[in-house]
Amino acid sequence: MKKALTEVSPEIQELAELCRGNSGIDLDLYTVHDVKRGLRDLNGNGVVAGLTKISDITAYRMEGDTKVPCDGVLRYRGLDIRDLCNGFISENRLGFEEITYLLLFGKLPTAAELDDFKELLNASRTLPTNFVRDVIMKAPSKDMMNTLSRSVLTLACYDKKVDDISIPNVLRQCIMLIAVFPMLAVYGYCAYNHYKRGKSLYIHHPSAKLSTAENILLMLRPDKKYTDLEARILDMALVLHMEHGGGNNSTFTMHVVTSSGTDTYAAVAAALGSLKGPKHGGANIKVVEMFQDMKRSVKDTKDPAQVEEYLMKLLHKEAFDKKGLIYGMGHAVYSLSDPRSCLLKEYVEKLAQEKHKMEEYRLYKMVEEMAPKVIERERRIYKGVSANVDFYSGFIYNMLDLPSELFTPIFAMARIVGWSAHRLEELINQDKIIRPAYKSVLKEGEYTALEER
Image (cartoon, rainbow, N blue to C red):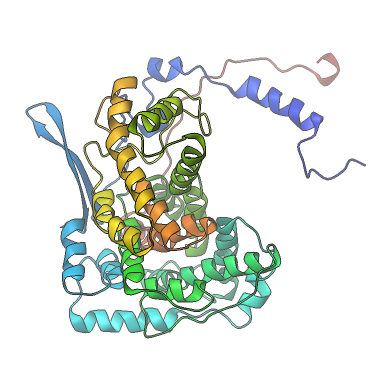
């Protein structure tokens, strides 16, 4: 009897090569058959797959038949993200709950509506009896996204109406998940930190008097303490990561899975699986790791010439992970600027001053200014390149003393709002399963009897 498959054996390696040899597709065939690889055209524009009223992205303006790149604009329910953020900041408020209401219900809440919604979220910020002990504490893992997915799927077992996809019931489920995501992620990390790292175990209950951002910091820190600036910047980051059009990978996953008629927990777990990928939600970790490698590799990071030399090595696949990328630079849609990065940047310096990280901040600023020029010089690009939201978010999370294992789960704590809005939109408007077509490029063959092979 063969051993269980717990590692890649020579036999598996050989089968993998067989799989690779018989599944490879000549990329020229995409052009021959006019198939949009990755659902994008030759200019990188996404294939239109649906309609939405939840958010909108603008990266260019039309001058006749010509696309002219412009500063990026992100709108939630038609409202510019800059105006939304400046609105709650100028009124000395945190914005996560208010903008969650906007995305779910399509309008800004009145003061009374906002208070009621906050109470609803607080009432939902609870887990089933012994859930932390019986689920989260069992089999702790460094992979917080898998831990989060497991917790979400297990919550389905406690829901008596798990398969009810009526709008009121799905809304109930979505509000509950929005409320408990920070608990699931932070408690998952606390379990890992204790059982795998040997650190002290603490489980702090969230406070009904605090916002989502404040509760994340309270639950995560042993002393429960945080500054006002820390809470405001984390709140801002959550708002900026909530939603980004229906075309991003995880939101499209939510639409596709929802269209099959499955339950909310399964749909959210599928979206989590998408977000976990380093090409999607894990990008800010790569930015932090890239800068760590830069500080190890460059003798004087204050010298622009040495920093530029390192960036050149990145592009030539001679440094860091040798993928030829400067992480945090460029975006599939934006060209001249990413509005989320612009908003975050306004507060990075303040946090860097509070955390005594100004030298590192100046390095980030140098790379932000230098990298687009290096990329434009070295690469043939069809649109401008600028810092995206991942460029500064990882640095911010580092300054907030958030463990890197929670970087992507924090993204999920925010994006669950957008996923929920899109799930509801799909259920309200569609009654057909999303079923894209694939062009077969198989060659016909003839069956051979077993003894003749």
